Image 1: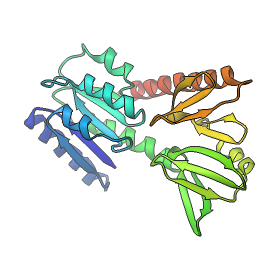
Image 2 (image 1 turned 120 degrees about the vertical axis):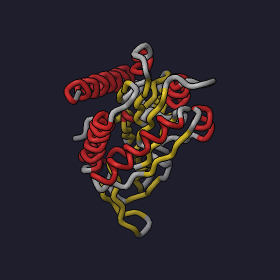
Image 3 (image 1 turned 135 degrees about the vertical axis):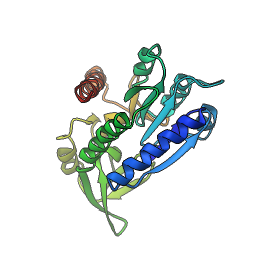
Length: 249
């Protein structure tokens, strides 16, 4: 699991890194922690799916944590953002940016352990579902959460993952669609086109916009229903995550 910490206080930066290393040792978990002493450095070099979670201080010189989060959300709606601050004043803005959690400083070991437990449980549950297929003389196993699109193309089925890799397989669209559509994340937007709703950023006319800027055509007849299904999914997802955080506090 890749984690980033952004904080312009050397003491706070070191303290959180120490707690995360302790968590990794206790749980026998392999963590890679990258630290930044300013938000500009994170934003400048950021790429989607780079980190599972980012611990982001709000009060920093020049670019604040909220400003950095806005930039990150333009590129990546998937990474988890945990804000660190000495005040509750920015909590509304933080949750508008789909913050996973909001922790008051000075952070306590128990708080970080709780957040990491929640994140670890979330990813363990998502990783339990995988799609198995054969492509280019190799067997593959993709977690559902990493599948972005599934599309028919002539005699092949094309499966594209979150890293932009496309796999061609001889499986039928119907067989894969029947399997993936049991998972609430997947939505059929056109005949022979299936999309993971976690990667949809919006709709523009008869086009579905995906993270990274790609667009796919949607059914003209069912366009409004498709968009509303995505909006309902997004609302439910945000609400459930808020409930889970409330129950664990």
